[in-house]
Amino acid sequence: MSYSVYLKKNEEKRIVAGHSWVYANEVERIEGKDKNGSLASVYAHDGRFIGKGYINHASKILVRIFIRNDLEDGENLYLTRIKEADDYRKKLGYGNCYRMVFAEADNLPALIIDKYDDVLVMQCLSLGIDMRKEMIANCLIKLFNPSGIYERSDVAVRKKEGLEERKGVLFGEVPDYCEIEENGLKMLVDVKNGQKTGYFLDQKENRFAVRRYCNGAENVLDCFCNSGGFSLNAATVAKSVTACDISPLALKNVEDNAKLNGFENIHTLCGDVFEVLRTFRREKKAFDAVILDPPAFCKTADEVKDAYRGYKDINITAMKIVKSGGFLITCSCSHYMTLPLFEKMLIEAARESGRTVRSVEVKTQAPDHPSLLCAEETQYLKMFVLQVI
Image (spheres, rainbow, N blue to C red):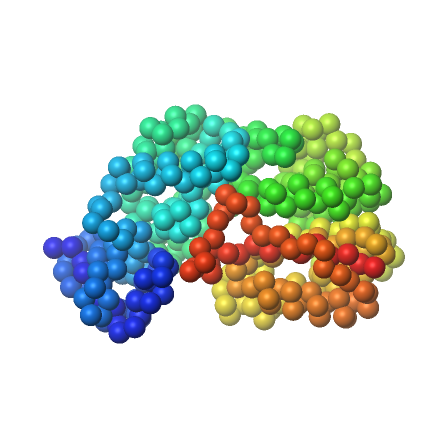
């Protein structure tokens, strides 16, 4: 007999509105018996059926609902959902590289699938999805016939599901680097060892947007540059770009990507961005544009205060080294650092920097990373374009 999960009174409102997650502390009782990771039915306190999802007793998120009717999970459901997700991206004009499936936003909680040319990279973030990854891989083969499928489930959040971190080839052949085309530029993506699934696809449109603000710039500083997405886009219109990162491997990737595109105006700098910015400030070095795209400074709500100070620190210093009339392009990829909180931090940073700063544009994650209005966790990326006047 499969599991039947009954919620406490009034705990169903968020879930009925479309949120997928059922937390263990919202549950009044569980009836039936099945194996962990199996499909469980969820009911409101009064017995109303809400939906079905995979159960995991080891996780604080007990059930992740993705079926709200009488469907059963299986190959046909995954074939349909994945094709619908891919059709949406293709309708928007995505082709060579994009996020094919974005978990809850595509009604497939805990499943990430990214496309890098003819290689697909899959990330399984829950027990239920992990148990079905071979079936999901078979669906991808049937739908897209990729040259290879690579698993990048080497993320700490899996520990909360009682799972080990894991990565490796699931199908076919996967090269160390996949060549993609983004915004008319060629990029080498390290799908096996690069951050996330190899590349930050969510910044695609934002990287193209910096061309407007770097146009004709004498010098641009790209901080936390990773593999150089922002650097290369800036280099199409700026005379000189300095790409800074603490990782020598990332900078090697920048150099390789610059060479691949024939750019000779990109220079790499290895160092801690906090220290590099302070050094430039002491040396009175100024830039026409500074780009800040740091990794998430907070991954839990408890880390927000420390993260706030970190974001404020780098933004104050960056504002001080932007030439008058120049631009600061600053980002946060943590959903805990909400847009209002990030804007509040920038207002304080502007005041403490002693510069007059105006907001020019606010952007978010690319359309292949849609967010659910009922699930704030799916809305995470903020990019502010500020002019220092």
